[in-house]
Length: 397
Ligand SMILES: [Zn+2]
Image 1 (spheres, rainbow, N blue to C red):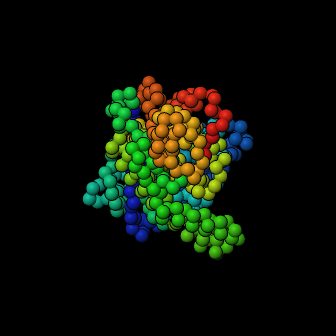
Image 2 (cartoon, protein in one colour):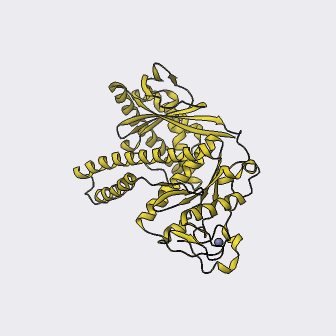
Image 3 (cartoon, rainbow, N blue to C red):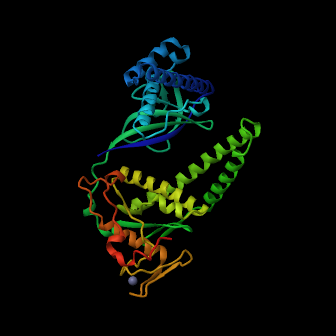
């Protein structure tokens, strides 16, 4: 199986390089809008949508007539045609809303689709039309590079390489010993509890930051549009968002890495939206949001390491005994699971993690050995194991 991974490095363009990049982004932004206008005109007048090849040709024609575009590597200009084509395809096929007009301050990236760049260990990153740019390669670049995107993020610059790797050497699920399988429970106070009774707290500083973000966002939303104060707050907000995003990524990356270093399979609950709406508290919302990000990260990490992520139905995983499957109702304040049927007494989070693991092991492996979300059939669920008698009274808290 071929997996695509992104490798992101900070780059430090010189002042004149940065000015060039800023100018390039601006003219590519205008080009994007011109191409969008062309598609809309064509659709209105000729009732035809514009094919990708025409978008690309239009982009290259525009390059010949525009001094600024002419200084940009031709494939980068042509890639704007691909972007607008993709945006309309996503719209027509129901995956996205109608493409927006790009605003210059929102147009923050340009892409070298195949060539026009070279990574040199001593001189830096060579970008066609720009020269060598200093780059900080903090981790090795693995795999075959497919494309490069240069990004501007709140005044900082990044190079994102998309590479292709063969990860088909992962072992099939049924060959993995049970001690290499970990069940993980979501928690409000503990971020994650594993079935081996180890747990990790959600960092307090992230909680604080996320609360603060909401607070500033609220202020920002109530300021007069295009006022100076709003502009200042917007900048501040963007910086804070970036900071929190990085801290969170760092925390989650380390956690996922730790889990997959020691284990081969991670079993997680698949959160359902209806359940999230029922538990409508701020703490719950933040926890659910960071949990879905964590789950996504786990899937990506597992793929790149040749390991597995398995999802199960969260129904009942807090309410049943992991040992005898007796219904042991609890509310949120009950921290212990104590079963009147078999006498099992363990922390509730560990009981849930063990149940989740038990469900995960049940799952029959897909025939091709893949473990991505799309490839999984119906999720293993406690419903089938406990029968209908208890269903009416039980609920997930
Ligand atoms: Zn029991």
